[in-house]
Length: 288
Image 1 (tube, rainbow, N blue to C red):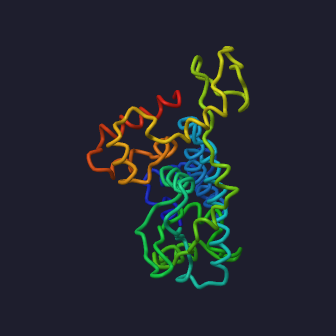
Image 2: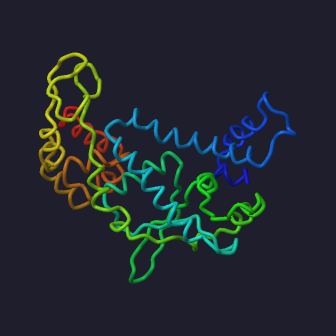
Image 3: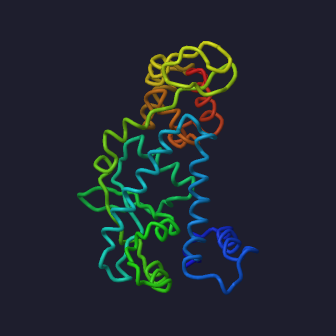
């Protein structure tokens, strides 16, 4: 079971083994509960990394919070689906219909970066469209009891289920139905911190920094800026047109949400240097 809970990360075995073999307990005292606690220890480490991204990516705090809510919804759906199924019929994969809302795409990207989900090959369902397929972190599957194995099942049962999982067995979601308009609305950028001292504002409508007293950019102005057309950036009209026709980028917000310039790099003539340059233009435009 611990092998699957690592989700392919060798360091995970070290984390779980250290928990099981710490100085305060003997090998004889390691019972089934301790193994589950060891899995929880590793999964908590992964979840903590996901949560810590709020300090590294403060603008995306709301997206990170939405990711936890979304993952729990998916886990519960999969758990219900797995009830009364044989070990070789269990689900650990899910798929989202394409195209996804931009906000959902960002939420999934952050979950993937943290290791809580892993993207698999896309799959076409004919007239039902194309779906982007993902596997949930197997440690999270065990922690959440998403295999719906019940209290009497053993570690061997969990291992058997996970060994027999198939990529073709996945829970399919219509993106816009799963990620509701209410959830989309929650995925708004956090306002930028004080440009003088770097501290976050204490509330959205604050006019002055609570730490240094400097004047803050208004919330309405910030929202207005990120909704501006990319033609507001110092780019030639030809380059603006190329970006709009060669990618899904239209407004400043699209550039800010384009991690690693993936969308920008789809545009002919825009590679590493220009992708970063345009991202810098967008950051400077909003005062970042």
